[in-house]
Structures are given as C-alpha cells and as structure tokens.
Amino acid sequence: MKTKLLGRTGISVSQLCFGTMSFGGDADEATAGAMYKACRDAGINFFDTANEYNKGRSEEILGRLIKDHRDDLVLATKCFNPTGPDVNARGASRRHVVRAVEDSLRRLQTDRVEVLFLHRFDAVTPIDEMMRALEDVVRAGKVIYPAVSNWSAWQTQRALDIQERADWARLQVIQPMYNLVKRQAEVEILPMAAANGLGVIPYSPGAAGLLSGKYLGQATGRLKTNRMYEARYGDGWMFEVAESYVAFCRERGLHPVGTAVAWVGAHPSVTAPIIGARNTDQLKDSLAAVDIDMTPSLRAEIADLSRTPPPATDRSEELKAPRP
Image (tube, rainbow, N blue to C red; front, side, top):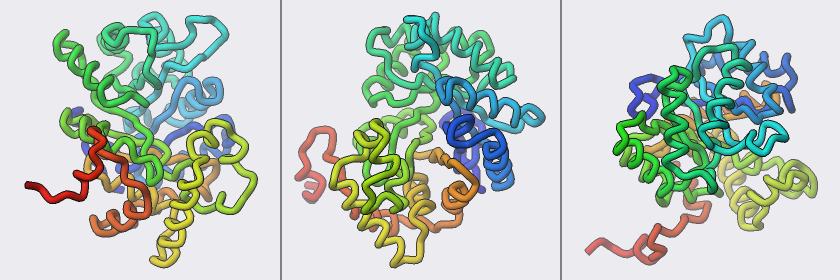
C-alpha cells in the first residue's frame, strides 16, 4: 500500500481510504472487526465515517476498534444530516456543528478527529457562518482539518476565499462522488481542488456495485430497491456503460471492482478513493486495486467506454477542436 500526501496538510495517508458506512448496519460488529483488520493488514491508515451512519453505531464500532492504536490513524467523520427529531439536530449551523462534533468524539472515544466534513451544503446557513463553525471546532482542538463533502466547485471556492480573508483554518479535503458513470467532478470540482491544493477522497468508485456487473440483467437488488441508488444510477445508459465496462475487464483479465477503484485513484487530483464493503469477500476485490497497473492509456480506454461530461462552458465542440 502506497501513501500520498493529503492536500497541503503534510500528513501521509494510504492510497485507499476505508469507509465504514456498513458498520452497525449490513456489517455486524464481528464482521466490521474482520474488515477493519483486513484493512489494517493491507496497510490502510485512513478511515472515514459519519455521525448519521446507522444512527451513530458506525462511529461507536470504529471507536472500539481503533482505541488501542488511535495515534496510528487518520480519522474522518461528518456532520449535517439529521441525528434526532429536534428541528435543530441537523444542518451546518455553528450550534449544530459544535454539538455534533462533541457527540462524534464521544462515540469514537477520542479527543479529536483529523478531518471533519460538512456532509452537504446547507442552503439556509450562510457560507461564512458554516466556515466559522469549522473554525470554532478547529480552535477548540477537536478537529484538525476542515473539509466539505458534496459541495460544488463555486461553493468550495467561496468558502476558501472567506477563510483566507478571515485568516481562518482553510479547507484541506473534499469528498465528491466520482466514478465511471458519474464524472461531473471532472468538469470543475477536481480542477478547483488541484488549483487550491486540496486533498480529494471520492466516494462510490464502484457506483454502488453497478460497475461490478452483479446487477446487470437483474430486476432486483440494491439499485432497484433503494430509492437513493435507483435515482442516482437508474439511467439506462449507465447500465449500458457498465455492461461494456465489465466485458472490457473480462477481456483484459481484470477484476471490475478493483479496476473501477484503480481508475478513480489514478486521476491526478485524487488522493484516495473511499472503498466500502459489507463483508471481507467484497473487501478483497476493492483492496486488489493497489495491484492494478492503471497506466494513462488504460485509463483513457476505460474512460472512452463512458460519457465525457461537457466542459463548464458547455462548448463541447472545443473538446475535439485543435488548439489555435
């Protein structure tokens, strides 16, 4: 397992990050422990969770697993989504962020997290107020590096500008969705991250299992029964891309899951794709990504199987036109 610098933080993280969304849900504590051990044995030192995952059980299980070697790890968690029935138990207000961080630290049995993501953009809280919330928890020593997840490029850039003007701790990491059928991040998010020296840890590199091929030709499964995934990955062209991609991998003797992870990780702006699993058998396929030689030519061949998103100006003809 290789390591990479996380943005401009100066700390090194494994080339894969393990996401613990399944802990306490699809994976019981014993299964979670087995997957955690497999990750550590493979060389992963970077773990991602969130306060909402399985109503806090993900953080609780992870906290028990890391307790004896906490200082060897880089730990990320998130807040934003509802954590209770109270109208203010959600969002990115200073009130909620401070309380959410305190609750996460208790569940994780630690005094700080390296990275705190605002899980989503809060449309009712001004960006400067959200950045002040992150500054509060950084100054309190509870968070080392502020971060955002699922934010657009302009929202992230606006936040960075506010922080720079106020001399606050700057955003250091972003977490966008990115995979072969969800490539919007290539248009502005990834270039913005590169321009600002931000670490990038994309989630869903396997497109919720679509790129594994296991859902092709099936009328059931997570992509059919889960409304969120159905909306995200339900377009017919995505299944066509997945079918072509799986066939491509079989012809080359490549495992589609590990290859999908390696494809995301090979983008020059990406620090570490987030991998996840429900059991150790699934995990092995993702961990195998580190053994795949994702050359620029192989990455380009795989990219050609999918739709290239238009540039920010929407002048698609310029993608093929020669430079003057």
